[in-house]
Amino acid sequence: MSKRFLEITDLHGWYGESHVLHGVNLHVDEGEVVTLLGRNGAGRTSTLRAIMGLIGSRKGSIKVMGQETIDMPTHRIARLGLGYCPEERGIFSSLSAEENLMLPPTLGAGGMSVDDIYAMFPNLQERAGSQGSRLSGGEQQMLAVARILRTGARLLLLDEISEGLAPVIVQKLAEMVTMLRKRGYTIIMVEQNFRFAAPLADRFLVMEHGEVIQQFTQAELPARMERLHEYLGV
Image 1: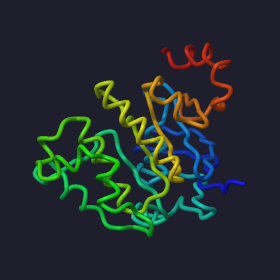
Image 2: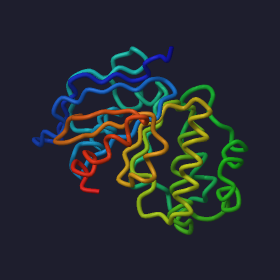
Image 3: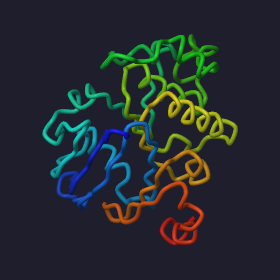
């Protein structure tokens, strides 16, 4: 029986006066890959940011392995084994790829070694000495994910990792997600690229107006495609 890694109940979130999350309810079990679907502005990225405590203010309940985190600062939430890969990637352009990789602190036991990471991302080993600004978009994206894997995080929050990348790189990222899942990582993905996300996730949650309005499993996907087209405009 899988353990519940993350449980969110009636989560509300604000940026200043702007109320962006309106009672989000969702859960993710250990080892599960869940994709948040929805149009731009539906609240998907804000949900990831709220989980990490990176939103203006939040109320409700966010439990990580049964521990309430709603009043915790971000650095303590990260130490519970959470790693966030934001859409903007945050690669330091003046540092080499390897310096970027070594930058975050170790937050928990069981992080991947640099050798493990290079085995998973051979491109990064080849570009280890290259400045961040000289890496391609795909290499920067791989580096942004690889950085979290070193920290010991077990729940990965991946925001639009396939956006703007060539199909061959997107395929590499799909292989990476599959490999991480086999290694027992728990993953929440925000994805606009439905063709990328569809084969990877165990469950899909559809968000609209700052709340989850639908959820279904991989097995239910074929029967839901028509409704999904309506929700997502894809």
